[in-house]
Length: 399
Image (tube, rainbow, N blue to C red; front, side, top):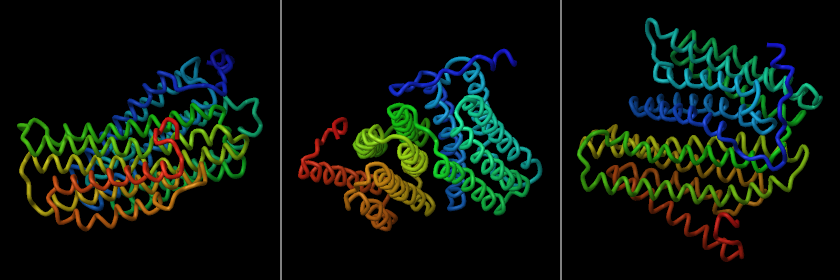
């Protein structure tokens, strides 16, 4: 073992790009997102939405720490690849037991502990690998020490929540994950997480947003199941594709601009943008996308099984419009923290999505999905028009 760790890690270059092994790691993350969506879909209630949000945050932190590691060194070579592979197994276990993580009754504590211990294991692996990577970097060692303290502190309420279950679990896990994510931000402020390759860092976050958007398309099949495809189902599927395309263009235009801004930064300023605009602000973008996928699945399930009961009305509406508002709020925050120049309409957009929510509440699921599509098409058209008026290229690749 000592001989293995005597080989030095391969530092990434300024022009480093995402590797195939990192994309393979993301496949396990995809499995986790699918499990969260399935969990919330089976238990359509405000409590389930809250529980799903917390598990999404846990998965996000699990992905995040390895994206930072992969930005600093190549994770597809040497002993780091072995460590990350073990961490993938831990993420897989977390995703596997998600549906049982919130159950109460005899024998359920074991399932919650499996999730927590798997999460602790993947975090320990990341800290050990990062500490080994930072052997010759005094600043990075200091940053890791600060982050390790908050991470270890977060494990206490996480384990207690698994033992208690119920409402206590929700409160304790919310506190634990807030400490965990906040600890990374505090470590960035006090010491700084170096972003070695800005192009790699921006690309990794853009890819994970695309992965989340893909969940909206997957949810079409999950909602329909093996039911016979009828006209309303086909229309809902096409509307879902339109919604996904709109969300993609809204994000990609912002990502291109922010990515260029990140490349112009250096030192601590680049580190702070990476921690705040990418690590923190991208979470509501991803979480909002997953809630939209949940709403789509509920609408398609209602159409496939011709359901009209009350719970089949409010759940997709809250998920569709609330998820869109969360996505747009995250995008506005992302832009404000990266390019520091956000148009008023980009801040108003999430509020407008919430204002449309009560209207969608009284519409059939298919009509609510159509209303969301019209809202996003109008928003995308307005932003393209304002960019033309300001002389900014409308092509996101050139934004």
